Image (cartoon, rainbow, N blue to C red; front, side, top):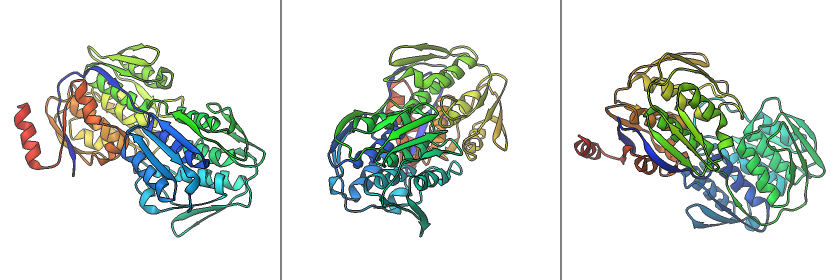
Length: 430
């Protein structure tokens, strides 16, 4: 089992290039099968989740050609099966985007109930509500969601809760429904907008993505396109908080600063200097950082996917901070691990109180999920000792060449597999 071993105590300094947004890319790849013509998608992150989804798409008969690590050509003409097996779904939750894509194109889909990180309840009732509103019969049997329709017809749909997954899935199905679909109380995240832009580049007629109301005029067919995925705001934010926690000076390249507004606001609040450029953001952390209060909210609020990264940083800030997690109830698991490194934390329900400490101590910790794993690596980089992070398979699901990028800005981190590797690392850095 692979682990990261980290020797902390060095400020991270330099430039780091941010890859394509994993969450946008997953939905875009699913949507790419909705035409019988060839679609080229580039700026893909080369991470496990993307590779698993491409295997799932290939497994139902689509032609998948990897041009290079970050570019793929997909042709959905050969699809001969609308059944996505559990083997793919249990690895990545986003396989459920194939529901909306297949239902839109073939009016039929069978997808196993999803897996992914265990960060809390992520019901799919809003997806089902949307599909049914469009005229599909939807049943859950034998661990599968089965959706079928003679035809899909546009409807006025009001979502009970804001859901990124439901917004994207129902938007895909409605793209090839008859007539006008109006979706209200929708998610406004940048990757929702990116998927809408991608579908529009294939000939869809979607308006209003990024606002509270999306209007979709159904089309009969979609065509080929070439499309570049937006940069990953969560990867960018992770490196920005790594700069803050290690008292560093890091410039993240290939980003859209507007997507990072909530993250930038909190960095400035705690005492970092932040400089914005057209497609880059520089974070400088010097002197003592101060506490703040954070509440996770749907975009444009502070992202739940950035909560562990700011949590680690706040544990090193002077004073008392509070974090309120309003999206996922299991998102504080990393704080138990952080306490092993000397953090002073107290969790009550969906709130955490964090009393800042001067420094962490190295320890052996375990990544409970993708973002928490990255945050624990930040903690390791911010301590004077040696930290070992187990279960890094979670981190590899969503960060490309994570350890390489950290080394590029001065982090001392290696991927190891055996006790011998660990001893070798310790000898090297002692």
